Structure formats: C-alpha cells, structure tokens
Length: 360
Ligand SMILES: Cc1cc2nc3c(=O)[nH]c(=O)nc-3n(C[C@H](O)[C@H](O)[C@H](O)COP(=O)(O)OP(=O)(O)OC[C@H]3O[C@@H](n4cnc5c(N)ncnc54)[C@H](O)[C@@H]3O)c2cc1C
Ligand code: FES
Image 1 (cartoon, rainbow, N blue to C red):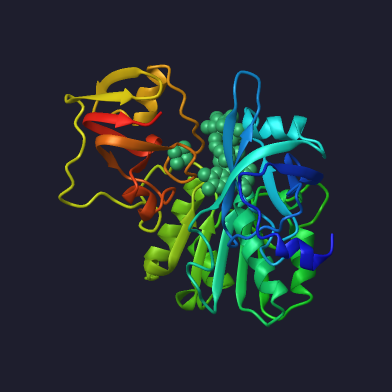
Image 2 (cartoon, rainbow, N blue to C red; image 1 turned 120 degrees about the vertical axis):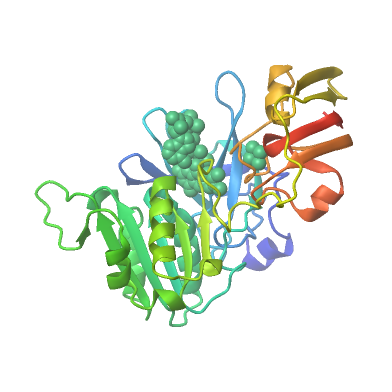
C-alpha cells in the first residue's frame, strides 16, 4: 500500500487485533515479535509506552503487558521484545505458540515512562535485562531524528551474550554523534575475553560512566533490586530525584517517588476489620469482603471475571465502571483523570468503601 494511503487511514486503534508478521531471536530466552495492523494502519505512540496482549492460553486468556521496543519514528510496524523466566506462563506461551499470521487482541498504547513526558537535552538511560526495551525505543527515535544527541546508555546483563540489541546499538553509535554505550556484565562468556565493566552497577561506576550525571534526565528500568541500587546511588550523590524516572515490570516492593501516586497524608486508609459490599450488577453477584481486599480479589473470590495484567495499577487492563459507592484507589498511571471523572476504577488497586456497585 502506498505510504500516503497508509497514513490517510489514521493510526491503529486497539479495536483491531495485531497480526504477528515476524519473530526474531535476540539472545538466550529473548525474542522480538513484530506486529502489523491487518488494515495496514500505522502505529502512533510515544517512545517508552507499552501495550497489553490478550494471550489465549489453555484455561482462559492471560493478559501480559510489554513495552514497545520499536520506535514511533518507524510507524509501519510495532515490536515487543520479551524475555521468559524459567516458570513463565504468558511469555512462554508467546515463545512457543506465536507464529507469523496469528492475530492477538491488544490494548494500548499506554504509559507515562516516556521521553516525551520528560523532555531533556541530556539523557542517562540505565537498564538491566529486558528493561532495555523502553530505552531502545527512545534511543531509536532520537537516532532517527538525525541530529547529534547526548545519551549515556548503560545496560547491565549477566554475560556479554545476554546483552539485548547490542549490535544494533553499536551500529547506531557509529552513525550518530553523542550516543555513548556502556555495558556492565556480571561475568564474561566462556573463552570470550571481556574488557568492559564487570560486577554489579554501583556508585563508582556511575561516576566513571557519567561524570555529569547531575545534569542528565535519568530513565531507569530493570528488576526492582537493580532499580533500588540505582536510586540509592543517585540519591546518595545528591542527584535531584525529580529528574529520575523509572518503569517497573513487576509490582514494586517499595514506593518510588515518580512511580507511585502516594496516598495523601490525611488519606483515610482502608481497614482490615471493616467490611465492604460489592454488587457486580451485570453478573448479578454480590460479595462482601474486608475493606483491605482489592476489588479484583473480591471479584475473583465471587467468581466474577475481571481481566487483569500487571496487578499494580500500570497497564489499565482491569478498568471497570463504578456506578455507585466509593473506593480507595492508589494507581500507577493506568487510568486517566478523565476516566476517573467518568466513574472508572482500576480493580487491582482499588479497595471498596461501604457499598459499591460495578457495571460488570
Ligand atoms: C509496564 C510493563 C512493561 C513490561 N515490558 C516488558 C518487556 O518489554 N519485556 C518483557 O519480557 N516483559 C515485560 N513486562 C513484564 C511482563 O508483562 C510479564 O510480567 C513478565 O514477562 C512475566 O510474565 P510471564 O507470563 O512470563 O510469567 P508469569 O507466568 O506471570 O510468572 C512466572 C514467574 O515469573 C515471575 N515474574 C513475573 N513478572 C516478572 C518479571 N517482570 N521479571 C521477572 N520475573 C517475573 C513471577 O514471580 C513468577 O515466578 C512488562 C511489564 C509491565 C508492567
Ligand atoms: S491489572 Fe494492570 S492496572 Fe490493574
């Protein structure tokens, strides 16, 4: 289809399933899946955003959220880059079942961990493992703009062969001024000498890699202990944490200033010994539960299916309409202020107050 016709159709929206068009192995247990819209519509999103896929696993659909690893500057396709842990169910299903031609339902794009939301001239991208995906999208977008840039790109991996996108990034770094790559590995590959940084990311490495870190907008993504180490290193060096942004792929163990909308100090927190009642209007079911249960947990206990993904208020999969009553909701950006105004809540991070009715 000619490009002018492609763009004349308008951007892809999630009422159309995504078609897998190719699969590319990246490193051990990591692959990139490339999707297109069967209609040919282009993708409009911000670098750093994610989509949530509905995976038809046996026993019912699973919802999994993945950062878009491709760049909005290349809108004809959309890629995700996925890493499966040993006991993975959803991601492993993709790796073993998805082939070109298969379509999947998807929602999004969504997310606030974007360079567009936090514009800056100088960046410090720090990632570990599959946390490299949002940094790849942001870096490709900056690279495609063709101007010299100022990015210090740090990625930590177990071994050099586990570094995702290494060759693509090294190629980019040879074609643009100002992309400075720093790899950190825990151990070298057998019979492959490694002359770069080795060990766990720490304050000393930070100072050596980015002596001007105080002037840089920091984006961090990786396992929670890794992000904690990065936060502590920066905070310990007097970095202004208003310029620090992070994305969690798992429920955070402790609130991080930019990630969690903390309850207000005078917030009236839910109490375990106070009971609430939830009426699921469409299902015709009513459940009672302690105020400290989430709406999602209460629904599950009552046999009412609410689709869910991340379970910590990021992906927006569990959005339901509240038609009556009050909830206490502390989310992580998976719902907009307009949606809240219209009565929507995220079931995974809302606690019922008294009597609540839901449109489900
Ligand atoms: C905003 C956002 C963006 C994400 N982007 C990506 C991405 O670009 N690439 C990607 O591979 N994943 C990404 N994830 C994580 C992904 O959604 C899944 O949570 C993760 O892949 C685990 O799902 P699973 O089906 O493989 O494993 P599950 O069957 O859900 O869990 C299997 C085991 O893995 C553990 N586990 C769950 N989540 C993680 C995790 N994130 N890392 C390590 N272990 C985990 C569980 O504790 C469990 O023991 C993202 C998540 C969020 C919220
Ligand atoms: S399941 Fe992701 S926001 Fe609730």
